[in-house]
Structure formats: structure tokens, C-alpha cells
Length: 228
Length: 102
Image (tube, rainbow over all chains, first blue to last red; front, side, top):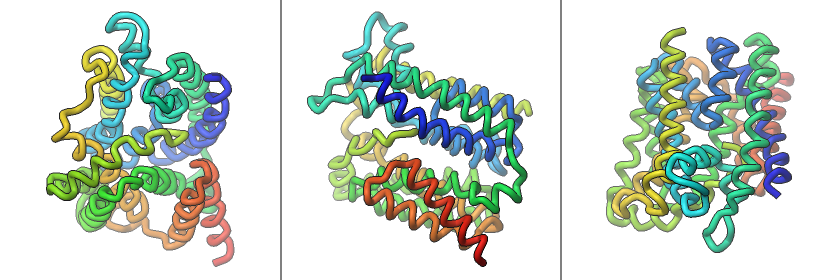
């Protein structure tokens, strides 16, 4: 079950990884580091965010953006804790299998998790993600070719569909609009990485009492989005 | 190069801790209810910011109107429950075609 689900997810991960590898190298990341990043981090959204924010933003902005992007893994991994095996160390290691697609595939309607599906699905996706990155990074075409064939659209398109998924909770729409406005204004004058961090201040809107209720209604609605 | 290595290793460490913390320490507990809406809103804020920053670029110098129809197509397909990959490939194809024509 897990291998079959993982194989389906791996095809998508592989193709996205090829694009990621090519674009990361085009943005100045050495091929070896790009592949190492995929091997160690294994998270599309955080890796795309890191490369985007690093351009002009530096270490702090890139690390903060990517770390905030993956903050969701804390509650997601915690939700699987009861179903993992062994002591703390082993559970911590097994928790590394939590990626969006595998997490969603392993999630049962009653709220429990199928540990075997979680582990197997991630074990299949990981090599696909790393190999895809390597192929993209080593066979990277020039910037003009990337633009001509529309591959510069991979980052914004990926972020756009992920954003659509997260907006299942109506209360998050004002937050997203405010974040977009802040980021758009800020990146006119500041580096993209700094603009991105400023955009996160939009979450302060959730501190309003009415907003708090509507955000909570959508908690965990669509974390399983196929590729993360 | 060194800054890239530091950034990469930093993210790898943070990512490991995120996934390890829950199973090893938190068990099946979740964030305090007061914090949950704010934590839940972070991805939406970041993703909205990432879309805008990726489209506009530093000083708005990367803006290219041909990406907009592609992104709208991706949204429309996702609204019709197409996979991420389908949405992204369609967006790329639409924008590439547009650039070929104009």
C-alpha cells in the first residue's frame, strides 16, 4: 500500500525535483549543494523558499523563511507519535518520514496513522526527489532557455497551488491578502528575503477574536497536498 | 559558498528537529489553543509572500506579465482538483506558448 502510494507521489516529486535542481543552479547554487540540500532537507516548499529568499536576502532571511514554511511539520509529526515504534530516539528518526504526501496517505479517517504506509511512501519518494534534483542540477539549461520554455514559472506556480490548498480555511484569506500586499510593497525597495519575512507579520491578524475562530475552523484541512 | 553551506545545514537541522520534536517530546499533544490559529496562518502568509516575491522579484525587476495567465490557469485547474504536477505543467505550457506567440 505504502509503496504503491509512494510510487505515484514519487513521479510528481521527481519531475518537480528536476525543475528545482535546474532553477537552483540557475540562481547560483552549486549542483553538489543543490543535490545535498534535497538529500538532507527533502522538502520542496522549504527548499524553494530557501533559494528564493537567499537571493538578495542572505542566510538569515533564507533560513527564517524556510524554517517558518516547515513549521507545520511539528504538529503533523506530533500527530503520528502514538503510531510510531520504539523509544524517543527511534520515534524521532521515524518522524523524519513525515512529508505532506506520505502524511496524508497514512492518515486514516478516524485520525490514526498507518505507520507502514507513512514510512514506505517516504522511502519511495526520497530517492526520486534526490535523483530528480541531480538530473536537473547537472543538465541545467541556460537562463534564456529556462525563460523561453516557461520553467521560471515553476516556483510561483508551485507556491500558488500550495497557497490555494492552505486557503481552505476562509479565515486565512485576509492573512494571505495582507501578506501579499506587504511583500509586494516591500520588495519594491527591499531585498526579496526581507520582504518575505515582513509578509509573515500578516499572521498578527489572527490575534483578532473573530479571526481566531475562523482560522481554527480550518486547522489541518489540507496538509496532504501530494508534494511538499 | 560557505554561506550557502551554513544555510543548507541550518535548514537541515531545523527540519530534523521539527519532525523529531513531536514524536520524541510532545507525544500526541498539540500547540496551546491560543497559538494554534497563528501557527496555522504562517504557511498562508509565507506562500502569499512567496508568490508575490517570485513574480515581482528584487525591485519589481523580474515582473513579466506572461506569467499571470499561467498562474491563473494553475489556480483554475487546482480548483478542479487536478494534481499539483498537472497544474504546474499546464501553467508552464501556457506561459511558454504565450511567449512564443507575442
